[in-house]
Amino acid sequence: MDDRNDKSAKCKFVLIMLFHMLILFVEGRRVEFMKNRELLMHEGTVKTIKGEDGDVIDCVDINKQPAFNHPLLKSHTIQMKTHVHSSGTESENNHNILFQSWHKNGECPEGTIPILRTPHSNRRRRSYPTVSQKRRANDFSAPPALVGGQYYGARATINVWNPATYQGEFSFAQIWVGSGEGDEANTMEVGWLVNNGENKTRLFTYWTRDDYRSTGCYNLVCPGFVQTTTQISLGAAVEPVSRYGAEQFEMIITITKDKSSGNWWLLMQDQFIGYWPGSIFTSLADCSTEINWGGEITNSEFAGHHTSTQMGSGHFPEESFGKACFFRKIGYVDESGNMRDPKDLQVYVTKPPCYDLRFAKYEGDGISFYFGGPGYSDKCP
Image (tube, rainbow, N blue to C red):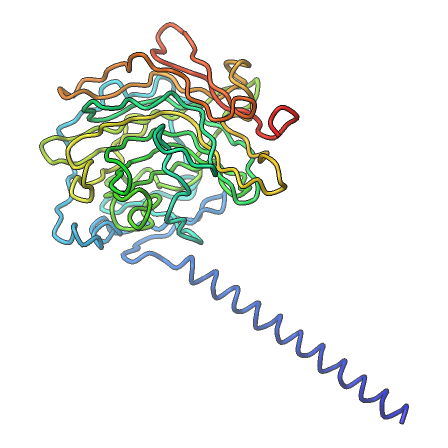
């Protein structure tokens, strides 16, 4: 009996091991299959480039980009030229030119646009970051939005860093251009982000026409934004980034309305990237009534206290240039298409012991401020 039991036990052990090997094998295939499926080549791809940082870029026929799957853009004609100009957006120093490492391994040919392959969609944001709608999940350090006027664009030079993030949280530095209230809130957003513990700082755009409920997405993940440049891939990593006490790097962002077409154009440095068609919006189809500049993080309170996800450089604004993250030359576009300095801005910060903001005065920098902080500490419980 003991011998039979021993043989039976050995057989069970072998079967269990084979079962687990099979499961691992099947799971391995499934995971790999899912991974490949999630990173499928975009429709209309004519060339693929893999960056040294791991980003995979598809060069997609410009006429087959995702935008034209939007029901309102089925018969849309691409606007390759615009009546707005790039005056005031030129890079001030050569080292401020936006760079994405995939360019080291190739260029997208004319007639295509570079689209980043993404493993997941990140379709909706966790909050609507305006003064009028505070959400518990997020902290902000920003001047209050310009509210109540008619604005036709916005601008900022944003210091680029790589703050630490944890537990699937995000850290942003961005411009919000919005209009509408409640479920009718429309917004366009542009800046840089770091997410989910990733050691990369990424350029991003976002849009919605219903307060993030069912429309809009990041970059080109869903139909909406029409890209025209071959040079910049929305969502791809940017480099280099600023280092504490060392050289500082910036991105210059402009959003401006082309009144003749109704489209909202995006410029990075002095390059036209593409546009949001006015037809995909409701309240933003005409003009913006609210603009904001600043930082945002998501706070999951994972360990029962405030997150350690950093905002900006991860250092407080009083540490100033070279150590704290900054915005400078912030502005808005008036009805005549002129760039103006916003007036009477006040500091708006949800949790000053965690992240703070202070205005700065440097000749030639226009309206500027430092912002950010480290998050969790004995002063930020």
